[in-house]
Amino acid sequence: MTKKELITKLNDLEWEDFEVKEAKAELPKSCWATVSAFANTAGGWLVFGVKQIGKSFEVQGLKNPEKIEQDFLNTLRSEKFNVFIDTTQTKYRIDDKTVLAFYIPVSKEKPVYFNTQANTYIRRSSGDQKARKNEIDAFYRDQSFGTKTSEPITNTSVESLDKTAVESYKSYMSRFNPEASYNRIAEDAFLKKLRILVDGHCTYSGLLFLGKRDVIENHFPDFKIDLLEIPGTSYKDASSRYTFRLGEFENLWEYYFECFTRLRPKINSEYRVNNEGFGEEFAPGVVAMREALVNMLMHADYFSPAHPRIRIFTDHLEFYNPGGLPKPLQELKSKDLSIPRNPIITKLFRMVRLAENAGFGFDKIDDNWKEYSKKDPVYSIDFDSMIVKLPFADVRVFENRKESNTLEDAQFNFLNAKDIEAQHAILRANLDVLYMELYSNYGINTEQLRNNYGINTEQLRNKNEERELNILALMLLSPEITGLNLATLLNVSKSTIDKNLAKFKKFEIINRAGSKKTGVWEIN
Image 1 (cartoon, rainbow, N blue to C red):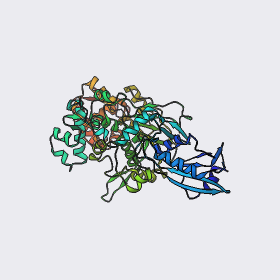
Image 2: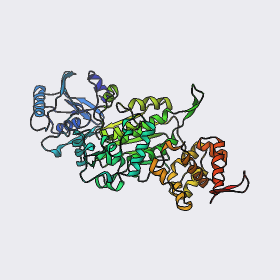
Image 3: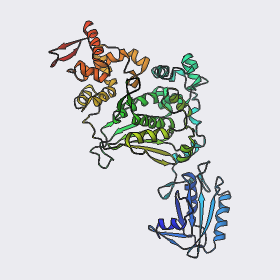
Image 4: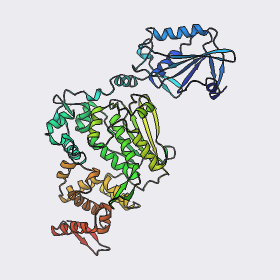
């Protein structure tokens, strides 16, 4: 019979995963590896008295089912296994033959192994595989789920934190969560209250979130958040391995904005008129994407050799998160449970209103993405990782771009952009390149902007100082740009741009060479 036919005969079981063993007269030794794998991964049913031949299943029955049952249960309760495994068992009669089925639940005390730790197994697809050392280490970290990154690091101090990042975070909180009590206390108390510092030392979470990269690398040698743009629906149909790969940044706070800046142009949004007659952005896709991004950064296992990774394909976004869930996905969704792996990092995101205050935000991802693309997110859960896929409504065509490491690359991308939205995305993605160009060649100082706000934050658009910098940045990208184009790209009125340009001319910062229509801007 087929797998489907066998499951039909065993119709009162809910099959998450299962393995069959012949076991005519005695228990096969391989069954203990399956017990370990099920207990360590996602649980499953172990069926004795059935033989698998290729993709077919043949019920052979057990000669002495009572003995098989007692031997199996006694071994599970013996010292052969390092933890007690409580099973559910059912006896079946199929074609006058006896079959025994045992449900092995997921253990709360992983790793589960028999005889020695070397006999730790995990479930991959439909097979049992020996766990590697890093996978066993992950099990032990999960035993202290939610505590490891809250520990202080003895050889760190406030000097290990990036001052610019700290001030940027505080400024962000004051603007987007102004009623928070943390806004009204001094910086040293601020860092202690949020448990960025404990007894004068950085916690692992505090260091990851706001630390200096060279100090972070002392404790997380290969620290990075990976983001790649892949010109295809998969690697198989992509014309190249990737067209863009995110560089290295200081800490998680910087990585969040860099990733968001890169992801934002992939999500279309529209403007609607609200009840007061003002236009406002309607962007459920952005909400879902941001929640998936923050969820990945909050719940990643940063001690894992794998990295959090975002892949932007032409038909979907993919967020890969090293580190399993503390409970099954459906239970977390149904009960709206909040069991963060990194509670301090989670709180830091929540205090600036970049994450939900309850649960894992799955409902926010599901509902908003479905409203945006008419498609459901897809979750792939493993014992040591999770992947969230957000499918687009249609396949996107990537812009003709070069990786923007230089002004020339940014100018190429801006010239080849198809619309205003794409041009705006290129401006936001290249602010660091453009600001450095202004500073290095024209003496335009960005220190105040860096210290107060950080670079590439989405919330800077309406600040007058930043608008003036971005006008100059756009002139670098496109010297022939018009005042109307500047107003459209920076989301302000033409008269506001005219006032900025008049100020620049008054102080001889810029001049226009040629006519209004065909001339170009020159920065002095």
